[in-house]
Length: 135
Image (cartoon, rainbow, N blue to C red; front, side, top):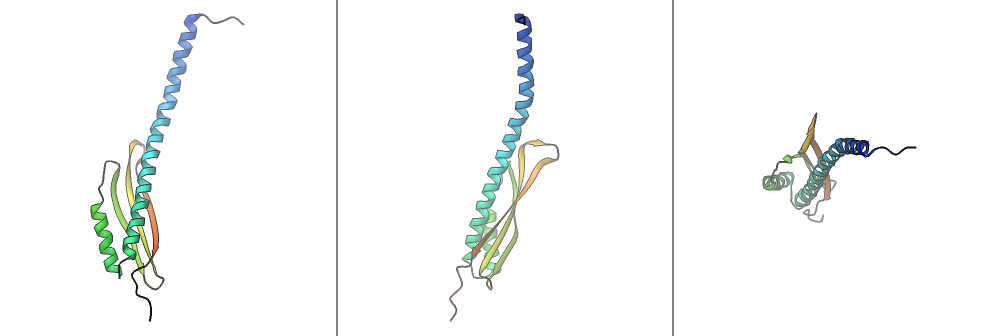
């Protein structure tokens, strides 16, 4: 087999580099979106756990909802996290548990068509710790 002349080898290398970049750049941008979504989902999970712990120390459904609304008032939105909403607050003294569900709207940094905003939900359940012992 004859070696290729120098001129053709340079052209092949340039074509390989261009094709490689065409493949690598979208993969990198998709990885950036996945990273941003995973970080936001983790923050949503931590927020719902904190809210459930705070609600578990309250004595009723209304005080638990008030405490969660205070937590939501302190949440700062950003270019990535557009909104955080408490979907469900269930204070059940019969079962002895508080269930809190948060929904977060995440705007992806490099949006793909039809995937500009994603929603993630997190549910946390904590035992109620503010109930007095039965007599």
